[in-house]
Image (cartoon, rainbow over all chains, first blue to last red; front, side, top):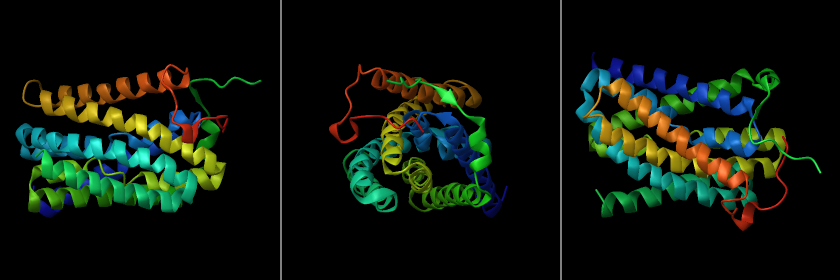
Length: 113
Length: 144
């Protein structure tokens, strides 16, 4: 599989699984339970499956190791998001979450990996 | 006083989903997958792995929830995402540990199971009051 085709397939699989988990999140109640699906491993599941198929399990294991750091940054980002969304509303709150994730991920990358 | 069920589903919500919202979420997921793939090729698989846990999906979800159900519901939504994010750590740990030991499908299924188990356990503990809520989201829960 050529690299552009590999990337395009990752994109399609990633997009489809995000939509699938998002629809699930829309259907379930209450909101706090639905919120779990906002941090579902949709992109990870699609991408790791494809990495395994094309590049092998060793590469997928390394990506998963990196994902541990990203997921810890995600906890920090969502925790900051609870305060930020309450004070700044959803759009700006999401911006705060993205900045928090980038900052925490950069620190973890520098200190741990 | 009405008590809120821990779990529920309303298939009628499917009718409220707009094609543009679906398209936006697909675009976010596709874009993040491409960025993770390109970053992995350019900076190594560790960096690509980091990006698999980037919160790219939440902005679309939060703005949609806020528009439909109000700010408080959006805060509760992101509060739930904190628990899902803890589950995401367990997904990554299980995947990293099992890919080399068992067949890939088993590793992915185990990782997904770990995410569901950890997230749901934390959710039940919090919803039943065993796990205290942060002050910022304490109070009446939206029924929506």
